[in-house]
Length: 273
Image (cartoon, rainbow, N blue to C red; front, side, top):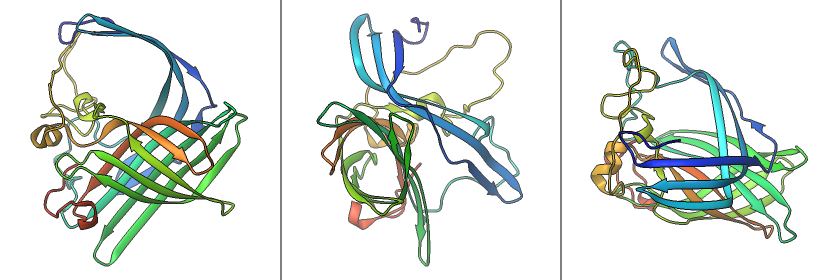
C-alpha cells in the first residue's frame, strides 16, 4: 500500500503460512422472515515480514505473527441498512459475549500449532444460548474441535477493551486445558474505522459514485469513552496466550461484550456494540 491523500501510511507485507488454512463453521442467521447472514469463512495462521511506514517513520519486521481470513456469501451490515427490518441493536437486558481469535502457539521444542477460539454466548433472565466453534490446529492438517470454552475474562468498564484472564477449554475427546490470555498493549485496530457495523452513516458496499473515492479519519486516542462508542468496541487485540500444556503464543483476538455483568464491573444500560 502506498501513501494517499488521507493517510501517511504505507507498507509491504509478505504473509507466510505456518499452518494450513482452516474452514470455519457456516454462519446462518435469520431476522424475522429474512436471511441476514449465510456465509462461510476460512482463516489461516502464519508469520509476516516486510516494513510499515507511518508519518515517514519506517519499521522493518520479520517473523511477526500474522493471520488472514476471508468470508463470502450473504453478510449482515452490507450497504445502507434496510428501513423495513428491525434493528440489530440488542436491548440492554441482553448480555452478549463473543471472541474470535486465531493464535500461533510454539512449544518448547520450537514446533508450532494453532488455537482458534470462537464462542458466542447470549444470556438474559430465563434464557441462555451458547455456540462454541474452533479448536486446535496442527501443522499436518489435523484439527481437534472444541467441545466447550468457558471464559473467565475481564474488560475495561469504560471502553470494554479486553484486559485478560483465562479460558477453560475442553476438546471433543474430553481433554481439558487452561488458556491464560494477556492483552499485550493498548494498541489495536478498531474495525469500525473500516466501516464494520457502519461508521457515521457509511457502510460496507454503499454506492459512492463512479471513479476513485478516498476518505478516512485520524483519531488520536481511540480508548476514551466517547471514541469507543463512536468506533464500536470490536477491535483487533494483540494477545499472548499461555497453554497449560506448556506452549505459549501470540495472536489476534476480537472480543465483543454487551449488556451488564456485575462480576466484570459492567453495569446494565451501558451496552454498546
